[in-house]
Image: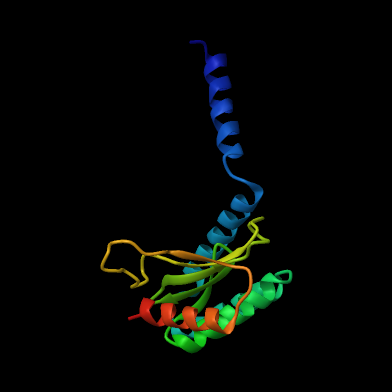
Length: 160
């Protein structure tokens, strides 16, 4: 192979990898990298909780309706149900962590260009069921009192 064709194939590989991620996915990866840099600069002490919650509230405030209203209610339910969870950003979206590890998170459907938002749980959540199978994310289009109660139960179980 000549040097020119090798360079051309390298360019093709690079171009195709750039096409694998949507603009939203690239933005989320950039947000996560920024979060990691900020955490490395700021440490992980108790003083970090207030700035992290402010960042979460700011991200929620920047969401378009109806995602903003959903995220505000999810934030209120999660922080009341499990005050030991620390609000923080994760891929630019609201998340709630225990001992620095994300347990649950909210994903804006509009930010992800999906028809619904979602509440998800990471591998850190203690939601394991006896049958070896359990959901790790829930679609949210509205939040009823029954939905809030279900979130409260799930979050409390997740942090046990």
